[in-house]
Length: 113
Image (cartoon, rainbow, N blue to C red; front, side, top):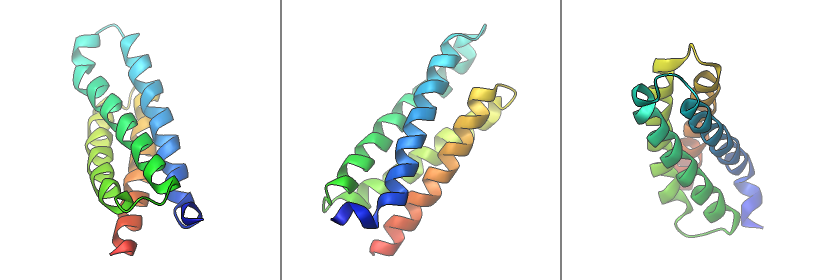
């Protein structure tokens, strides 16, 4: 039942991955896609690591804390990039989800030390 102690962080990671995927997809529909290339790449990286972190926490992996530390870094980077584009609702929502996930992952990793 190791996943129960991580449930809030797992939930934050799943929400973040969902918002990142939605943001990347919406960015592809914007007029100046090239200007959003960094955002799209970070969205995809963030979604990938968030899903991986949620999976490792769900199964109580010995590497859960390590991946959550990295996940927090990627989420912060993604939030910083999306905040450059908050005139777009999808980027604003993604930045918020990334910030929440970064906090949850940092808290989880720190508590495990």
